[in-house]
Image (cartoon, rainbow over all chains, first blue to last red; front, side, top):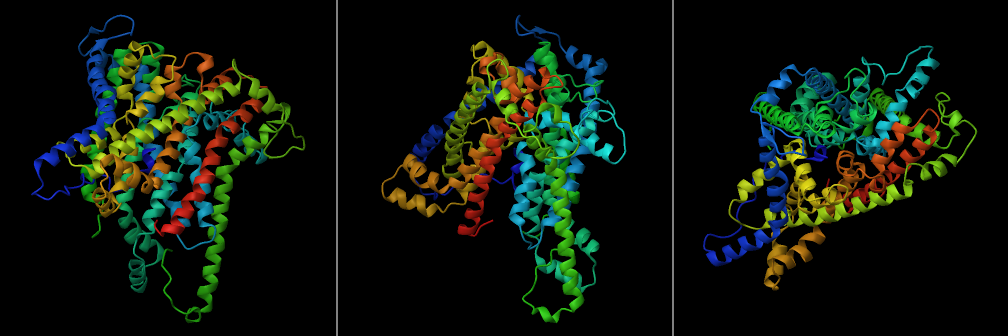
Length: 317
Length: 294
């Protein structure tokens, strides 16, 4: 969902419209009205977000199975992670998935956006059809379909047989199972593509004309104009894509039947967290995993923002 | 590439260039259509297969096999412990209440951030943005503990109540951004006519923010219709199951011989999303045409 987010997110809260001479009584009244408007959100923030965050931070240092009271175990959960083979497998799977699927997603989105970026016929139709998969890509129905398409007798193997190639199940093979989930992610590239497309339309045409006059070919124009002008959107899509990829769940759960198999090859971090927390009721361990994810994501985000100084180009807007 | 065409008379271009342009147009469309076929073929295949008898489903690549049957839909609809009419009803209930909850809580919050002055506004707005990037897993366990304490397991409350409390910061942010673009003069003139903040909110801002409301409703609809983890955690009784859970259960219990039914129910589960998308897509295009904005 956050994929839809347009750039320029880190805008400031809008400034005061009140002139300095406004009476403090009406200011206080307005603050009171604001409190009324904000009440539902504030309740949610405290009871469903901030409070639970603190509670899970506490739980991450305990042994807790929901039935008896949590017992303090210090850093035991975090220490256990370093030798837990399934945990380490889940970290590996997730990192590979992020490292492969996010760049692929960006490249495919960019290429299709470039193909669509002209005054062409049927543009709205194309845009709608390319966008459709990203609306349904996270559904159980599509994950179930994926299991069939990449199954033993699935669509892909039927196609390969047509070409005279024999191949077993892609979903059932530990070497290719993760790949099918990467394909599922890239298949739903539409929302990322729409953002690039919107950005491409704002690149001033004069830049290309000037470059053409100077003798720059299409490739040169792409790398010297299009890419720099789009870096804010590349930054944004890469960040959101990474955050989403770290949290992927439904595809892996449905395609592997909830196991993360074969041989842990689709054991996503979130899937393992779910198994530990809710199948084995190791809620302390699951909380520790959740907090580790928060810290890792925060570090990634910080790194992204830090690196953006060196490669993101915020024109003269 | 993306050169915007200047108002230069056509004949100034050499004939070869015009021909080239035609050629690249053809190549472009061919590429796009091929790509679309690859992307959408699995979907079409699923829909086509749902109308085939079970023994012909894995019959190679083709969409049509000659035999046509509605049997999969009839059998699928009755499948599962409760039948799919129950699951669709459950999903509809959760989805509708989620949309209502999100619209109310997000629009109220957004109005405050976009139009009102209050202490700690910047801090709270920063927190709002922060929660947008927060992985939901960090609240998963404690929320479960909380809802368990409240006795809300096997009710729809854990799926619905958070939406009434504005936990989806993204939509709040979206509405804030939209309301900020509305001219303040409208508020001022309504205030001069004696309207209070609730009046301005309900009579001026909300009607004007309809595009943002529509977007929020649409995306909440998709998110909660597709939601899998929430129902998986909180709904353990078959009579409470939503469509995604029912499909997953169906998938796990299906032998080699009921894929037609699975595909039929999968198709039905996607139909509302595709339908809403087609409708709102048209609205979107009309909106662009009438307001001239992109």
